[in-house]
Image (cartoon, rainbow over all chains, first blue to last red; front, top):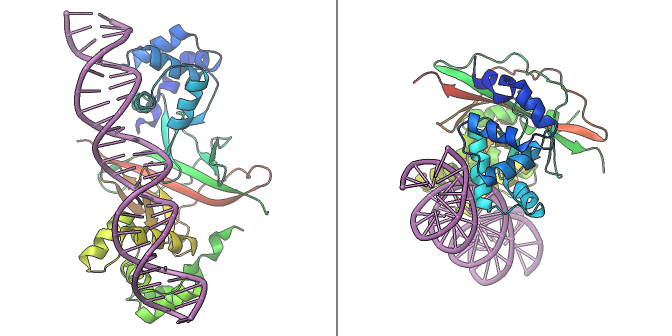
Length: 157
Length: 157
DNA sequence: TTACGTGCAAATAATTTGCAGTCCC
DNA sequence: GGGACTGCAAATTATTTGCACGTAA
């Protein structure tokens, strides 16, 4: 099996469900410590913004703006660092949807995405739609992850 | 149906097969005119490099380097312009595989991709593996395209 | 204390754009 | 000839990095 089955969310559903319904700061702190990240003020604030409202798809820029609005003083560089640290720790999943900016998904479980052309908006594909049979990975390789992006366009004019 | 079924390759298999085995410049010129692009020296040279050697996955930078090596005088900006014009004309398919650079695929037919982490290398998935049942597109939307990227990692150390 | 984090500004990387000059039809 | 195309360099956008200072353990 790949690393897919060892995602943090599935490891500890009590933590995850706590997070879903309001995630006390103390739980967030523990969560950070668990994955080896020191629970600093910035990480807790950003973690709160990220995980406090259900599944979200954000970009560095959008999280930065949200932090500004919430009067959370962080620099854009720290937002980038934090997003990458969270991703490496398995708290976030990074998505490449267009050639330019990166999106981060707070739902790290195995699922696919809709992308609305023009709106630059990402949505989870509701049910866990599986990809049909995949060919075996080439010699000496293993499948790390499968990304499926369904590009949507608004019907007619 | 979406635009997928009207890709140029499937429209005119004689053109496509000509392209596969050496694509005379005159054919390339006709192909460009067909899609509404004036066959300029640069477009023909880049088209030659792109379509003269079977299916390929290239980036703007890699095509630019290749043009330099082939002593084809084009500017990087023109490479970018040309790649986008070819993509809009349906001669290329643009792929977002990581958050940074864009890849372009000379195979515009419906197929999926392997991406080798670390190598930054793209490969076509051999058979035309279909994605399992997809949910209906949300109200007022239609599916423009489905991108599947299978991320591979080298097994063990 | 003390290594790990963070802020800031400058550095990169990828890509786009404005405009003067060039080339196909 | 005239509009479409190209080259170049400067401008943008997204992201990373270096380094002095701050802070959790």
